[in-house]
Image (tube, rainbow, N blue to C red; front, side, top):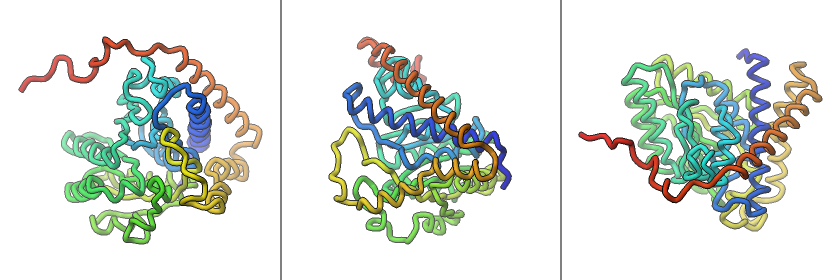
Amino acid sequence: MDISKETLMLMLRRMWIIRHFEVKVMEVHSAGEFTGAAHPYIGEEAVAVGACAALKPTDYIAGNHRSHGHPLAKGGDMKAAMAELYGRVDGYCKGKGGSMHLADFSIGILGESGIVASSVPVATGAALAAKLQNKDFVSLVFFGDGASNQGACHESMNLAAKWNLPVIFLCENNQYAVTTSYKDSVSVEHISDRAAAYDMPGVLVDGQDAIAMYEATAQAVERGRAGEGPTLIEGLTFRYEEHSLGLGRVRRGEYRTEDEIEDWRKRDPIVIHTQRLIEQGIATAEECEAISEEIKQQVEEATEFARNSKYPEPSELYDDMWADPIPMP
């Protein structure tokens, strides 16, 4: 599959956006600049970036609790994302949603949720809307290996297959649901094997390879737009950090070994993509490094923007909670 130089470079840029953003989030959270749970996406960047690069701006995505990488991969605003984590009015949800609830309808980000698998029916509903309104868009939902065992996930896949909806179910299999290996909770060898039960394609992809994720998603998008129904994609990946910053650290080695972590670090998605760009003559090492440094500075600017943004006023507590005016039957 031909992928333009522009797209390949955009993928590198967005992976660095996620990486530097998440590293900064870990730093300021550790310093106590904001509180609450935050779930680092470091190590999984290729999944979201590769998938979102295959979508149009008018296509929709929905995410989960590990939710910073998804909107940034779709082209989200770093300043608005960081301000939301800080609970400030310039955030995506005016500081009221926090880390697990970033949304921007203008670029197709339906939002994320801390409730496991709850975004899967949302994306399925968006795909139903596309079909009923005869609109040319697909929806894609990111969910983890733990969410793949939830009833809402299976109900959504069953309904999407029955109604032939243009939705892509993208399981980010990062090996562990908090501390439980998917191998201890999933009855099949691969989560993508479950697609057969719903008569839809199931595709197993190297989640550390942004190009492989792009190609698999592009094919699923093509099926959806052609009216051929949903696809289940499983991206095999790994989170390098612990499950959450705000819920206490699990002792290293308690549920995964140092050797396992190191083996996955050797397959860093940004390194893999950068080396490919250099080997194919698409970019030089210096150009790739310059992109990283540029984005690192942008993340610093986004952090200062968040720090300088105001907190929402207590009087605004119930603003945006309901439609105004409330629709009447």
